[in-house]
Length: 497
Ligand code: ADP
Image 1 (cartoon, rainbow, N blue to C red):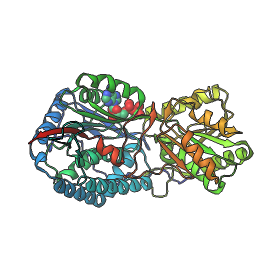
Image 2: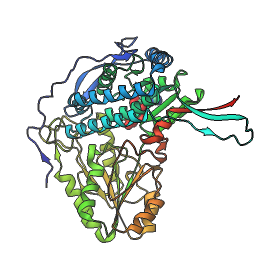
Image 3: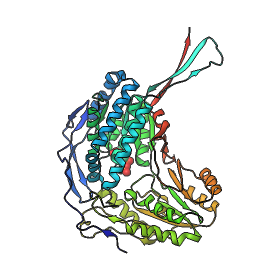
Image 4: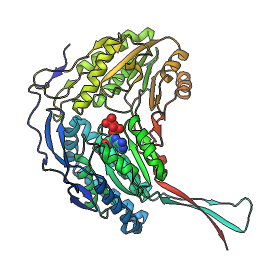
């Protein structure tokens, strides 16, 4: 069955503000000091949307100065109740402007409008959750173990200026995941969105000002890796919260060592999704498809390795391929579209490169496998849902993160065998399993080496539940109490009366 397409695929772009974008420093829109700009491109049609100011080291300096001044200035005077109110108002504004924000991400990275709307609502919920958390920061009174005359206690203080460096795959979601808890903790932020997706970050920061955030508390410096490096090396930045690739994370770890910055690293994954013989296949098969094809596979916790018990292997692999073929592919700005383009030309080249690697390694292409060039799609960066079978663990397509709609399927016989296969990876972000047997579920959740394990479900995130990986998938957590904690320092006080 061919991919379903809407025709004509690419309708006129929605009403988006396409004026050139400035940086946001100390509450003011400003051009880059050297006047540099870069283009941001619509991946559904391959054309330039607008120009965006590109921050250099001098701009990063000014943004960090503004964030330091705000930390010592008006923001320090905001008590938890006031921080909560600003965050709640900001959540309301995000909902009110949800359509505008969603469309910015749709044209910037090709996320389907349905997914972008869902993600905006989800991000607003996260802001409300951290708004509540702003009022829960507390230390401990500690019975001194040696000197009874001392009163000893801890206080929690904001870590300071946070450099938030975010990726392009879910631009506003990733920004809010970092900025929400940082503000709840009382930090100030310099945000560096990805060069492929700069538009929604600036609009969000403008809404934050409207919500009552003092100027300088949230600054936005758009730009590429050089801008990110300037932020990472800056002695005025106390913490970097990063989501992106392992290669960039290594640069950040080295560059931040000089000033011993605090780091939260949410990196890639090659996450195993395991279907046991007793699984409810009516649930497991579409979920396995959604686990890898949502967002065109450009999700760090995508279920990119599928392990299926041999007794149901053919049925599950055929079902996942069929699920992919049934997705309506097209212009992400159409509400009916279920599967959009890859986010950029580099990403297209990267994924097509892996399709070639897979074929050269001898894997069998069950479905997909080549760029879509049908009418209306040819100018965009479209790669269809792709299933590879007949793979072995040594293949690059099994070991490396492709970050595209490509799943590799492998049969297994025993629990020990699948545990070994699933854990044979440098990554450890997420893992999933499908079974009706409670014992299997209990044993497997213990044995899988991953920061998030999902049983009979996939990809469920919640503001209250920490998310983040083991091994090369990083350290520190996004979301949950853990993330708030990571924006706070602990000061221990001993007081003699
Ligand atoms: P990807 O390869 O998926 O684009 P990256 O890790 O390169 O992921 O990008 C994630 C974010 O890190 C982006 O905002 C990008 O501009 C930024 N970045 C890239 N290189 C560096 C660097 N050397 N230092 C700091 N940030 C960087």
